[in-house]
Amino acid sequence: MELSGGQQQRVAIARALAMKPALMLFDEPTSALDPELVGEVLAVMRDLARTGMTMVVVTHELGFAREVASRVLFMDQGQVIESGLPEQVLGAPTQTRTLAAKMGAKVNWVESSFDQLMSSQRSQSDT
Image (cartoon, rainbow, N blue to C red):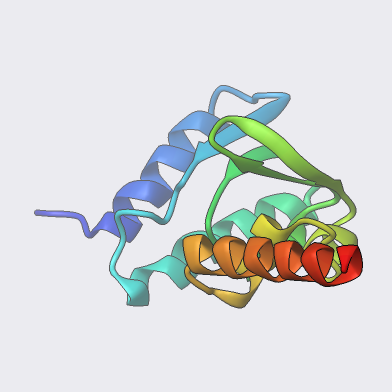
């Protein structure tokens, strides 16, 4: 018998819970899953959140983070660039990189366009 990726993740979560941990760490728990299996794993994690389990989750599932998290840290290249409540960080980001991720945009293009716009604005104000 072979388990699907989603089933394997759920088994791994159950095995970790058997140890009665104070908190659980998830490092991109859905990254290797087929899209139809992502929901299964996120449902298990939602249930854990409802029970009050403290979780540290590294994820690209921004909708899930907004829904379940009590605090969000947005990182880029190992640095925290924005942190706060999910509705603040994901709903009204103050950093270009966070906004680009929220919009699903190509980050390099957005940052470069933003930098060009700011440079243009500075040039116009200098004249």
